[in-house]
Image (cartoon, rainbow, N blue to C red):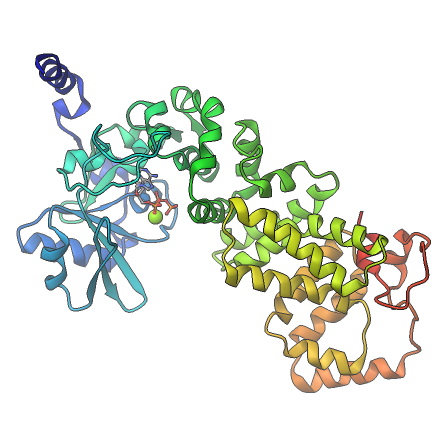
Length: 458
Ligand code: ATP
Ligand code: MG
């Protein structure tokens, strides 16, 4: 008991907060108020007018300081959800175990949460130390301490335009250094996803992980296995769509965070012949993200897993299975395997299937079936996917372009294009020069699905 008290006392003496947080003015942090969501400012103002403290916090402050456009804005306050909700016309309390408030302004939602306390020893954890409940209100200082990295624990006060910094986060951020708050091993045990987040932020900011923060990752990487699959999926998606996906994956591999933990990453990083396709897919994704365009998760995962599907598809056909059932079985087995670790949600996996199943149908152009294909909801995505395969050299690029032109055309032009096909002498295999270059002699005669794609993809 006495030792506990002494420990606490000494802890307080040395805690950064003993000297109080840094209050950093606009000239030093450089946030331009015009880049801050006016709705987030509004939430802070209203709370302040009612006597509460309220700040913009987390990723938005980090991104604003380094000149990136924040994805969304979160607010932290000392008001409780019940105190927050009545202050806004459209606000709802969400969450069961830790409640927070969504304040809604048209399309924008400002997530407003009450200061929370960091993990304590009496908190419920699983047998590996992962925190299962995180639901204790706390002080402002405690709220900073429970956040993951110093650069994510910054509070922007729109009223005086100061950034409140309990953990030297602004200095770390300016150095592009990812530093965890507290004891790294303890923080990873509480939540292993923080290891993945460290890698993602390093790639996104083109920064480095501080040595002490990095050091335990290698040995603790296997804790990722205990993280629920749906949470891993969300984190993977963030990782793949942060605009620096390839850098992230390389780093994950270097840190041993991919091995056997996420089968998807094993596939992506270790399958021979897969790199080209996957790299192309990720480069395109990165380019889209950086240009501010949207990303379809189904398309992305369809691309990442395609090589694996393709290999199994080929194996099954070599065993005598017909094209379409073989593709269906290949898709099922790959998806089943992935879903064990990474909960690819059903709506994504059904879209992925549609994108894959359309691929053999692009190999032959026949009037009637083309009209049916165009009507499929995923036609556009499947056609984009075909372009990727053409860029990777596994599908004839002229034929792929024809399909793209068709996808982009209006109805009348489409009809003309399809009609013009009927006038051309038909190439029996329909897959002209470049794909033919790679085609090997058939093992057995087949009457179905002459396969530029399947036969040429190595
Ligand atoms: P981005 O939205 O760009 O992925 P972010 O930092 O905003 O980055 P969010 O997941 O939106 O990430 O979380 C918001 C804030 O909540 C973070 O900035 C951090 O302060 C805190 N946070 C998020 N995840 C964790 C975690 N696993 N452990 C501790 N704090 C976290
Ligand atoms: Mg965020």
